[in-house]
Image 1 (cartoon, one colour):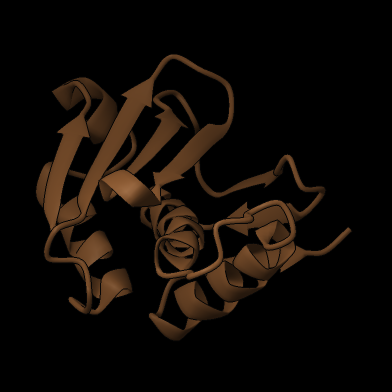
Image 2 (cartoon, helix red, strand yellow; image 1 turned 180 degrees about the horizontal axis):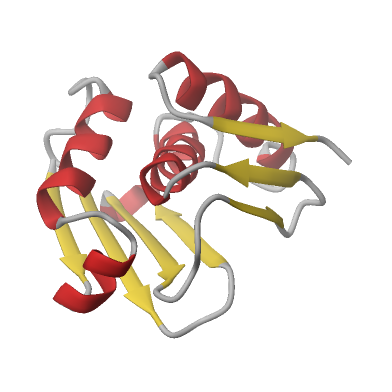
Length: 137
């Protein structure tokens, strides 16, 4: 897996993380299985909330997070789930788990699998030891 962290040192420091810490979260979540050609781009930008995309055919996952976010945080996602992340690393682990679910899917129709992706992300991030809770809509 090739990891790109696009963030200022100040943004990383405010979130209590580093390039290496983010890389370790991604390694833990992926288990190192089936990701040798995967490119993961993590951006910290002056935005609200978070966004993530899986470009399965290109082997790319992008995740953008709000650089100014404070943790612990509680926030809804675009699918109606209410999430609680204790730390930024917990947030990254959960969102990466969701996108990894899509990356490893055989079915190209993601529209019916977003809820399943969230179910998987919650369970998988918790199994990996990350502190995340969620309520379904």
